[in-house]
Amino acid sequence: MNKFLTIIFFLVFTSVHAGGHISKKQKQETIQCLGHYSATAVLPADTIEVTDMEMALASVKVIRSFLQKEQVSDDEMNKGMNEHVDKVYGKPFDKDMNNECNKFIYKLIPGSKEEIEKLSRTIYGG
Figure (cartoon, rainbow, N blue to C red):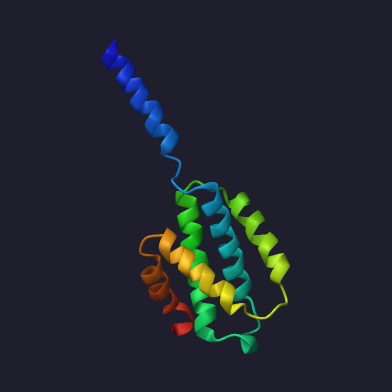
């Protein structure tokens, strides 16, 4: 009987923790950065450096993939992203926010800096 209870406990415990490991706060910050990068990617070309636009597009792809692995729904991502985009739409490139998001994302997602840089070089013939 003890073996049975141990197995049940193990299955319940691992299934509860299999859904992801980021906190609610980290998820919110990640989605806010997703919104920042999405807004950056659609700025008029004459208002932003091409490399910043390429990095933003690559960041969106990497963050979306990460959040999907964390079992965040597309609806939740899109809702949070759109809320941030609505706040900053039409405003100039926010270099400070970009630097904050870069630091946060690079720390949160292992290997993200290298993956984003590599992916960004494939955009616009980088």
